[in-house]
Length: 421
Ligand code: EPZ
Image (tube, rainbow, N blue to C red; front, side):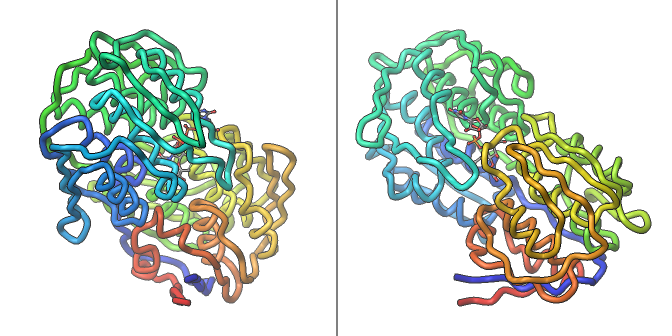
């Protein structure tokens, strides 16, 4: 398994391009199942998760071609040959469960493996199931698979989600586009990836209102047509690279980044003493002078502070002046990076869902272990500030969500290299 070595202490300078959003693309790709006509995505990120979703869609009978070096995904689901998402694919990537809604809407049946838990939490699918059952589906869990049927097709319904789940909102939104009648779903997720999905579905002929608010209304139609859609910029990749010059020193411009998608995060950086500017090319970030200040953070559904930037924020707070408190409210086990940062000399105490981080003058390089996607990049960021070398093992986690990370950070002056095992 590959590892990455980072030698710390070099201030950064230059541009870092921001790719299309992984979490938008993983919801947009299953939308191909809703139409017999081609769906093309541009500005797609080149990631192993996209390859996994492509394999899943092909296993259902879709044609999927990655063009322009993977930046363009051309899909067509003229004829589906299966409505089963197999455990072997779903266990690799839980976002595979986003085929459930579209398959049910189009084929009136679907068999989707339950993903099971992951490093950051149990992650059940009960909210997905309740939403689809409200639209008339009958869903049974058997042998680790959800077996779903919609006799006579899905029907419009009015329901509220018990928690604004991103995945459940995406599944229900796609399903409702072909349901008979109108669906009004409330307490839904408001993430920019949901807004991007609704924009794409509307380009395919869907009738949707309210995306980005906590209530979405969908008037079902008989069929959807083809479309071409540009994937929204990745706000989590942006946030990650905005932290790089804060941790290592220097100044970086994140090309194509949109500050309006990371307001809650940017506010905390501002409170910590970081200079941020939206330019016509992207987002420019630099650490003003000396050490940043400690800040308290609590993760929350959008537009709150994103849980997918919590680990990276912790890496920054490890060298801040003072003690910060980080509360993780979305996932029950998302502090796996804390003991690894402690190996680098950080002062972190975790009590349940809260971590208190007392900043130190300087971290020290050490061999550390990646446990999940965002935890692994927080270790890379910490390595940029550490004395000596940090070796991050199991970086396959990184490749799932960060396109060409070494080239992007190396291009801004970081001393970083991948060791292929
Ligand atoms: C999406 O996951 C993202 N993944 C996650 O990003 C992100 O952390 C998460 O949203 C929250 O923002 C993708 O978009 C592919 P949820 P998702 O359903 O849809 C509980 C990354 O690093 N829940 O909003 O799975 C669940 O257990 C990844 O890129 C239920 O209880 O998140 C969790 O505690 C990691 N029942 C909370 O809700 C359900 O049926 C939020 O989950 C569904 C969810």
